[in-house]
Amino acid sequence: MRPLIAGNWKMNGLMAQLREIDAIAASVTTKPPFADVLICPPATLIVRSVQVAAGRIDIGGQNCHTGIMGAYTGDISAQMLDDAGASWVIVGHSERRQQHGDTNAMVAAKASAARRAGLQVIICIGETQSQRGDGTALAVCGDQIAGSLPEDLRSYSIAYEPLWAIGSGHIPTSEQIEEMHAHIRHCLERRFGPDGRRVRILYGGSVKPANAREILSLPEVGGALIGGASLKAKDFLGILQAASVDVPRSERAGVGDFMRRMGIAADHGGFALKEAITQSLRSRGYDIVDFGAHQLNPADDYPEVIVPLARAIAAGQLERGVALCGSGVGASIAANKIPGVRAGLIHDVFSARQGVEDDDMNVLCLGGKVIGIALALELIETFLSARFSGAPRHRRRLAELQALEHEET
Image (cartoon, rainbow, N blue to C red; front, side, top):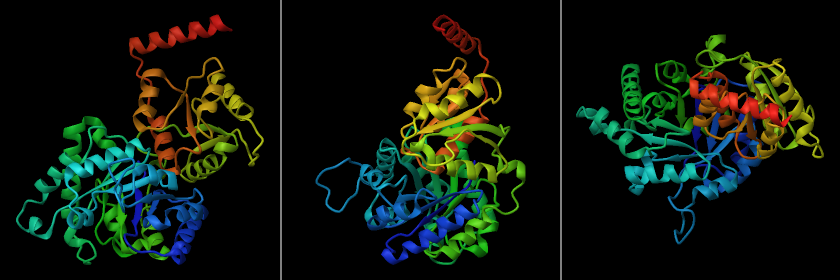
């Protein structure tokens, strides 16, 4: 899984600082990194940040309410963040827990509300200096994981924040970071089984360009949640570069036995996301066959590009493909008109994997106006790494579908 490098601007940032987001997005576009990139500005800048980022990086919120709407003066709901263009949200940040009294139960409720709104979520945990000193750090963080994570594990990341390191310049030793991240992974696997390995564990505590490479190279560190260093593009990009250094080419294709060749197609509604996906995957060693559209044409129709991709899949020229339109619905309808194609409209990691394991899904359909680049790449990697189980009941299902296709044709 790709690292996530996320910047939390906290209560910092005026309109003039949007140039920093533009600089980060421009650099990412020029030289795609081996990492997903997220900036979480204050709520007043989210709409403009989304406009400036223009799909090149993801934009998120710093907190959300548990409700959809109501008499909660000063609060912002997950639906409002989504409506503003955000694709992520941070919940349970140490400052929210300490200064606003956010409990584990409140954090879990916010995380659930965010997922219902279609947002990806970073859930923060961490211990104080006194808890570190009295030897209870592991237990404290374990309790926070148990109380702050909803039962549904989809699209969550964990950020470990040693509270005594945030903004202090004091960094835990590599051994302390490694110990805590291993403990977090153990807690996740104990509760969620194999799915617990799919959660990214970010480190967040005075990460800077000077120490980022060492921290990001540690086992179970799946990215960074960055505070002050994310306010300046130069500093943030230095950390982002550290996430891309010395990664073997085989790892750049993802974890495990990934397919390295796939087809892709999109109409105008999915064009921008297709271009971003293609650029990112090619930079990491994937062989991408692009069926178009090759330029943005608001008048095109999805069958024009999706059907040629689907026919190539059905003919065995490619094993897997990704099809996009605005919502993903039309792409799925068009692809499934071709016998031998099993296309699924997918917006979550569980379905991207199970669709292949149970149903031998060979075309992944995505909504270009529904999800951002980070989630799209995660879904594609999951889709390409999954394998059909071959279980008798699964083979029986496919045989029934093939027989139906022959009857209808």
